[in-house]
Length: 223
Image 1 (cartoon, helix red, strand yellow):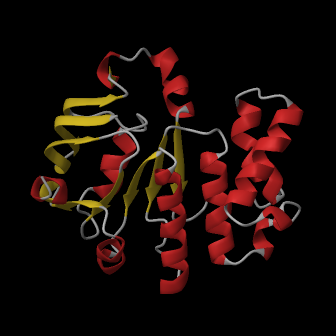
Image 2 (spheres, rainbow, N blue to C red):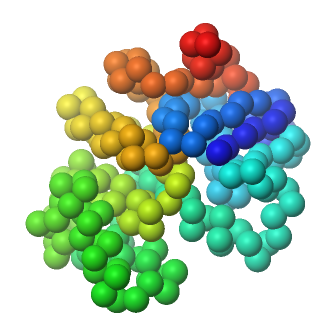
C-alpha cells in the first residue's frame, strides 16, 4: 500500500528524513514514533505529496509518486484522509459543515453528503453535535470532528500527525482505539506520535525514527 525505498528529505542544511525504507501493507496500523525533530511529520507529508522527497522513491497503491503528473495529485489526496494535532476546524462553520467540506470539494451531491457526514459523525460518537460550533466542543470532541472529516470520503489511507498531543491520557486512549477501529475495517492507518507508552499498550507495529533514520521497526522482529 505504502512503500518507501531509500527515501531522503532535505531542507536546506537539515536532512529531516535520511535513507528510509519500509513497506506498509493494506489495512495495517503503524505508529511512527521518535523525539521532536526526529522526522515524523516530514515522513507523513511525503505520502500525500505535501512534500516531495529529495532522494529515493515513495509509492502509494503501486504508483511511484515521482511519476505522478501534477494534475493527478488531487486524485491521490482524495484517497488519503489526514488529521492534525490542532484539528484545523473552521470556527465559523458548524460541525456538520466542517465534516462535509471534503465532500463539497469533491462535488458529492447534497443528499449523499448529508448521509455520509452523519455516518462519519455517528462513527466518532458525535451525531448529536452536528449543529454545534467547534468552539463549544472539548478538545477530545474537536479531535473526533477532525477524524470524521478525514474519513468522510472513505479513503483507503488515513494519516494522523500527533492526534493526541493536547489530550489527557484517557482521551488519548479513546482516540487511538478509534483509529484502530478504522484499521480493522481495512483502512491503512499511519499515526505519528511521541506517546510511546500508549503505543506499546496498543501493540501495533512501530517505526521509530532517530535523526531522520529508522532506528527500530518492530515488523522486523515479528517475523
